[in-house]
Length: 210
Image (tube, rainbow, N blue to C red; front, side, top):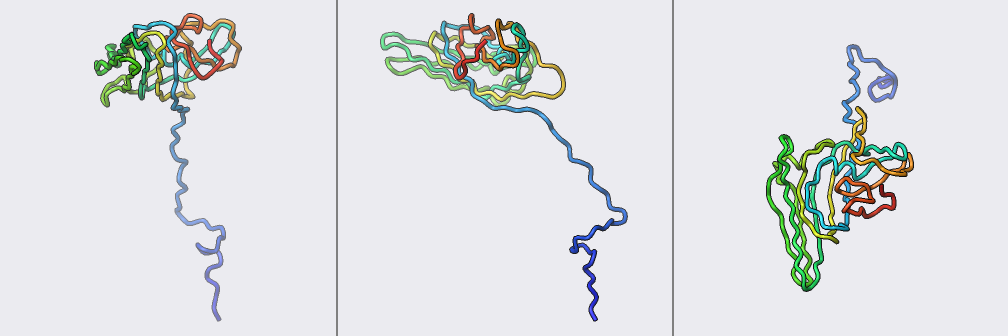
């Protein structure tokens, strides 16, 4: 007569408690909000100046009240910058971009990227920080320079960014307070950090601009 030895065994599906068995602890979590995106702007005036990490993080913000807003994301990394300008057939337009962050901890690669339009051929820059340039890493909102650019009116600027957020801490306020914002609404603003009414960069892709 055969005895069923599988009852309650490893394959039997029964409950068993192995002597000395260690129950594994829950695995480590790395909790964050991460968002890769492309932001597009069109210049409504010529611009020659620095773009800071505060400017980058202020581009997407959330209104707390009609006159206060905070950054939606708290850290940003530059992945790629593209700029176009279609000069007139009898006018040559020049674009210039340099990752020139000279603040300690935000060092750029100091490479100048420049392009010129000729006839109907638009000027075009396609640049990214060098592999070991610190300005291509994640940085929080600050007045440290991310890059410098000198571009004419009607330039199209695409910024490929990776944003991150944390569940620890408090979101930083935007550098220029909004006016007449709706609490809880998400807004875009110009790449220079200014409010929509005074920014030289018109954001593309949303009717909510502050």
